[in-house]
Amino acid sequence: MFAIVDTGGRQEKVTEGAVVVVDRLGADAGSEVTFDKVLIVESGDNVVVGTPYVAGASVTGVVLEETKGKKIRVFKMKRRKQYRRTKGHRSLQTRVQVKSINV
Image 1: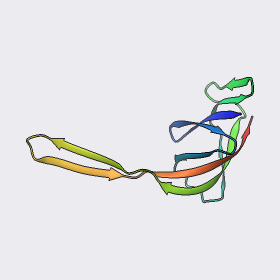
Image 2: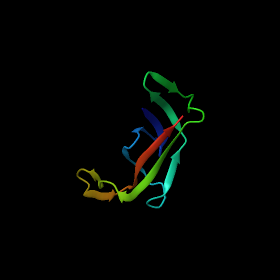
Image 3: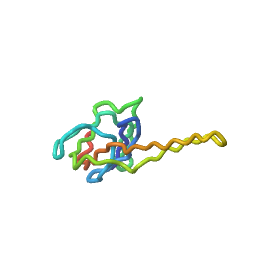
Image 4: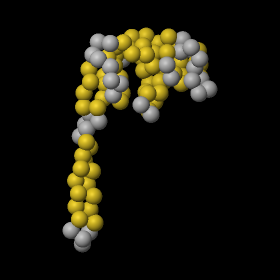
């Protein structure tokens, strides 16, 4: 059984017991979160596709930790003009362990 949820502007494929890394949710470690924007739910041969979301479906999970993502470096340069700029950032992320997929 799996589901595809929409969170943080991205779509994530989740299964029960899997650990998913999503954009920062702002929840404390150990707290329970619910994703109610479920696009597709598959259970065996039964596939339910939402328009755009599946009515009454949700995915619940437990927040494991909040971390920083991989460092991104942005380098700008204009040749022959002595213009060089380097910037970077690390996105805040939340690791969530999926407990159940509710249809």
